[in-house]
Image 1 (cartoon, one colour):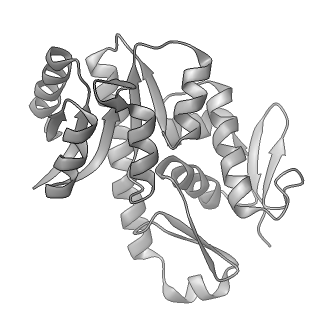
Image 2 (tube, rainbow, N blue to C red; image 1 turned 90 degrees about the vertical axis):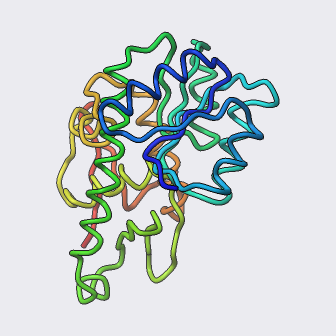
Image 3 (tube, one colour; image 1 turned 180 degrees about the vertical axis):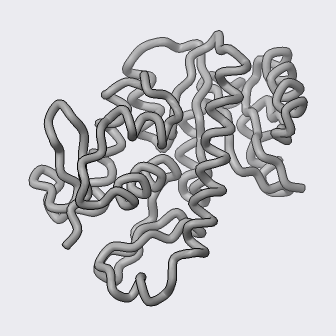
Length: 231
């Protein structure tokens, strides 16, 4: 079966309540209560997005995220009561696309999920519309069907949020994109932290630039935002 969202959380009552709320708003959602249950579910079903707790009875969300990233590039949003910046950075570094702290507001969490689902839909639509002629004439192109970038003929696999961020810069290439625009278009939240954006920009540069410390593609405009330089 196909689901929009899978919640992986050992807090049974909270995850069931969240799933019921999402289903009311036509975001088809299922629940797994452990690391083992998560992987068993994914062997039998397809999902668009995962909400992942850090503390699981038989492991950690960090372990689950790392394993999932070896095989798929769907959006992974951490949901956790752990509040430290270190936990946020670890979650993002191991492959998470967002971090939502508990206790969360159901309507706000639903909005974040819908933003990510809409982003996936838009990327798939944009990919279909992009002509093969355009792809042949550009040094850098994007492939939303595999969430990858093709740079100088080499395919580079990206995580979901990395792809969404690069897609936004790509659509505004050779133009400064303010941080507020990136937050709004990629995360759906104009008040997201700079550290989250900086981590994702750094990850993109490590994958796309010959020297991430001296970027030639993704340029920083200090205090304002970034732009993708393409000739």
